Each structure stands twice: as C-alpha cells, then as structure tokens.
Image (tube, rainbow, N blue to C red; front, side, top):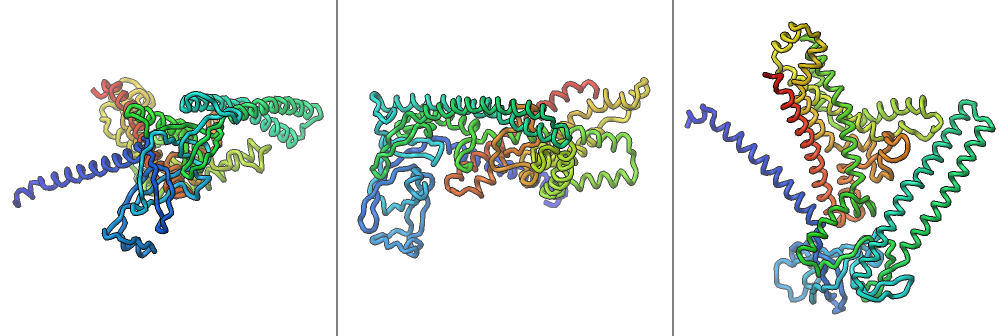
Length: 549
C-alpha cells in the first residue's frame, strides 16, 4: 500500500475524480437550467377546478399548474385551517396560474387538495396571450367586428383576425421606429444645431429662419404620419373577442391587445411541438413587456453580444501590444517583474471595483470632458457623460486585459529563440520578424486569451450596473439614424435581465421560469461566442502550422 501511495497513483485518481465530479456538477446544473427554462414554453394543460370553501360555498377556478408541494397538516392547522376529518400527515397543494389579472389580485394562487371537489380538462379552454395584464383563461364564445358577432368557425375567425392585427402591429412598429423615429432624430439635430450657433454667436436671422422652416416641414410630416399611426391603431381595435371566464361572466377583449391564442388541451404532440418552437422564437426575437416578466429578450441578447464584440475589439490590440513590449523589448529587469506581478494581481481585483473606476474615470472624467469639447450644445443633458455601451466595453476591456496579456506572453515564450535569430540572420528587421513570424505563431495563444476574456466579460454584471446597463432600453445602440452606431446609449444585458427578473420583479412566481430560460440563453450565447473564437483559433493554428516546422 505504501508503494502505491509513493507511486503517486492515488493523486492521479483523486485528480481524475475531482475533474469528473466537477464536470458532472456543471452538466447537472446546465441540464437543470435547460429543463426548467425550455419546459416553460411547452403548452401546459389548462384545468377547471370545482372548489369548495369550509363553509360549503362552491366556486370555479381555471388555470394551469405551475408547482405542487406536500405541506404538513400540523402546519396548516397552525395557520388556522380546521381540516375536519383529515387523518393524513401531509396534504398536497397546487400553485395555479389563473391569469385574468384585472379581475383577481394575483394571477397565482395556492389550491389545497381538500378544497377540490372535481377537476376536468375541457378541450375548448383557451389561453389568450395579451400585450397587457398577462394571459387570459376562459372559453371563447364569439368573435366580433365593430361590436357585431361574426359567423363561421370561432377558432378560424379568431386566428385569422389575430394574424391581421399582427400585420398591423408590424406596420405600426415600422412607422414608429422608421419614419417617426427619423423625424424625431432630425428635430433633435436641428435643435442642437440652433443651440450650437447660439453658443458660437453665429445664429443669424437667415440661419434661424432656415432652421425653423425645416422644423416646420418636419412637424407637418410628423402630423401626417401620426394620423396614419392613429388610423392603424383604430383598425387594430376594430375586432374583439368575447370570453367566458372562471366567474361565468363574459368579458370582451379588444384584439388590439391580443397577441396569440391557443387551446392546449386540444393539441396533439405535433401541435404542441410547433407551439413550443413558436414560443421560443417569440422569446428570442421579441421585446420585454410587463416589467420584463412577459415578452422576449432580443434587446438583451443584442446588447450582450454587441458589448462583448466591442470589448474584444478594444482589449485584443491593447493586450497584444502590452505583451509584445514586455516579452520582446522590455527585457528582464526588476521593473518588468513588478509590472508582471501587477498585471497578474489586477486579475484578482473584484469586478465592482472596475465598475467604480469606470464610472469615475470613463463616464464622469473622460465622458464629461468629451461633452464639454464636442457636444456643448447638448449640455446640461450629457451625451458621453453618462453610462453607455462604450464605457461598459472599455471597463470590461480593462477588467479582462490581464488575461490577454498573460496568455499572449505565454504564447510568445513558447516560440524558440532560434526562429527569431534565423529571421534576423536572413536580413529581416525586428519589426518584420514580429509582424511576419512571431505574431502569427503566437496567434493561437492570443485567441486563447481572447476566449477567456469573452467568457468572463459576457457573464459580468456588477460593473455594468454602474457604467451602462439598464432595466429597459428604448433603443438599440444601432439604428438607421446617422451616425448609425450610437455608442453613448445605454443597453440591456442578459445577466442584468436575470437579476432584474429574479429579484426586482413584482410578480415572483411569474418571473421564476423566465429566470431559468434567460440563464440558459445567456449560457448558450457565451458558448456560441466561445465556439466562434475557438473556430478562429483552430483556423489560425492550421494556417500558421508551417511556420512552426
């Protein structure tokens, strides 16, 4: 046994076991997040319960089960429930999403199994997704056009008219974000131009008249588009649907606020799969609603990817140049040793410290100076003097800079000295040797550092809360208005979206599945970015393999 320990075999097994346990834990976590997140979009069965109160009063509840748990009877009796005739130690209670938020205080409620008289799964129970007030559950009674009932199959009529409203919504969005957004942007630029001329003392009567004429023309165009927008809204409100809810009352819902309708109890496996893919697509491409507890996360996906790409563009040249200087030019002195130790220690600084630094240096000092120099006409409203995507990318670039420097230096140190000497002996200058030989050979190591930087930057949230990320950003950093790339704008981030939905949401039960879904999406985005970088690294490795031979 002592020989076995001395051979080092136990340590190999312990190391292998620790790695295996870590992999199993990571895979288990990913599977749990994926399962909880992806099943959220699967159409759930809608039940109709007949319930009875302890006083014998009967009432109906319609909804879908979101969770169930066993509760000790002693705990329920301690809470004031009598539970006459109950001899079991525990009772099951169900967490039911009932929707219909405007008629009930909360769209989730607990149902105790002793209160259930009967439970059924009617085939014609519908769930209606709305742009406001969440889902509505009930029986679709009729479809109306201008207040008059429409004949024919109710489901076909309803689906066709929802598709019509969806088309109108697309036109309204194009109008608001396209032409109307462009006019607002031009009006703001004219206001700033007028203010700039005032500050420079060059605002003549002729210049003012020209600006006012342009503004007048733009406002006239705006009124035309506004009338068109109002007409489209009126068209969208033309149709309505009458639904009988769990109170037995008929409620009229305008189709202008209805996004989708489904009859989950009447769906086969193929229809359920199609509905799942459709719901996933809406989640990925849609915009958030209802304080982020409903709708999609496309702005957060775009903001995360855009910020990470911008960070990669900034950190890569900085890290590579610093590593080349330290390894190829600085030599081995006490000063370079201190610099290397400082760089390595920077990797251990808490990320929130970088956020405070970014807020103070980039936002207030650098951004405030840029505003005074280049955008005085916009003051006191800041342009670059407030948190934005550029400052977020710079802050994360500083945060991940040590990773790129250390990785690049390791790559440079693996290149034999004979390669450099051979290149110099053939008459190449040191700069040519670096550019044509050393950097290409070190490019896989550079990409490895970039992969590690992307992995860390995409998951960081704490510093971003200070330098650019917000709960809801009305506009993306990229649009059709000059200069098209708006680096001063705030943006949404998947990591902050998870924090906001999970811990700041007014409706915790509704937000919980979204936390899992968004977490799974964030992991998917990070894996996608890393796989892209790994693909580029492997391509570079194969491309410059001949230099190593």
